[in-house]
Image (tube, rainbow, N blue to C red; front, top):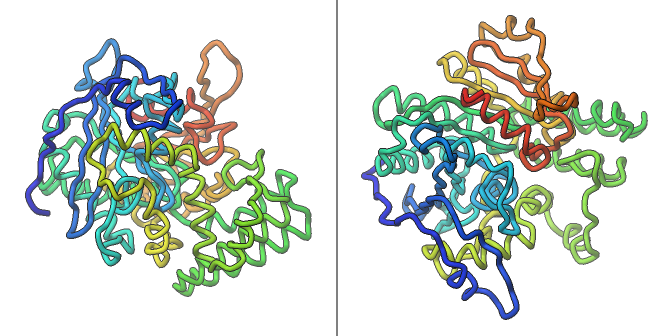
Length: 452
């Protein structure tokens, strides 16, 4: 992995004046006067491949950061930015308007946001052959980063370390978690690895696709004819996966999405109670000429780097960080990240989850009730395929209701746990659980990290 290059950066509390210097005339940013301790840096994980990370130390008024866990957050896509979307839209200390977030996970954990695979967010490659092309490369790169991080930040070596993830980030988290467990056992990385949490995760893509039709039908978003059309293309996806034709399966997956959009009047794949934003005429005409893979990238990475977030990251945040290359823009290489992972996209990693469970690693699965792209039915389907010897006992258990507000009778989630496997059914949430149900997501974090 090579020697670690320890960050020379010091904790920073940026002044409002220094931030405003980078903005156009008339712009106003209301940055909080008091900020917690933060550090950030790059790690060169391979030749021409540079990965960016950003760490926030926990800010609990009653506990020192060393008494609380460290959580690494991995975004989906692949190509979605943790330092952007996960940080400012979901669990970080500030929202995208730079206002304090009441449900920030920083109350209960230090947060490590990593832009991975390389080319995501502020991470970048110097040459086009340096992108990761499969899960093993993604995992290898992250091992280099984590070794560097824990070698340089010894204050976190004994702190319980959890990997939380969302969407494609869950697939990466499973692979990273297994390799990290092995590295800790071998002594090559020193950390207190305590578990992975797979949120609305792309563990078995075909199980998600096969349940799209039945789920939408049960929610009155498909009629009989629409269900038949979606089921037909889903079976073609299954056939391609079974034959190992993963690139063809990715193309057919995109076709299945188009069939759903036409039959549901443009349902939003990330929350079925909303609709997909209508495309402009320009975008529609471009989509017509693009190949199917580019269309998929536009649909599933673009929502993670909307215009407002891009302006924030490439403006005031880039000025604050000071180490981002001048000629590089946040998110500029995201589509290349997505397209280089094409052959890996539809491959399942159920066997990796099995290995994690057999190794005794704590595995948490959580899913939003209103998510379609990675719906709960699909998650339950792949869970039933696990070979883990304790699975029958897990299934025998009754779930328990959870309440984010103890004074309210409104159920926020259901929960089941046995040995080192836990499952959370999060109600009234779509694909981005912390975005939709911040209080419940924070409660879940505390339960997973044994603070409740």
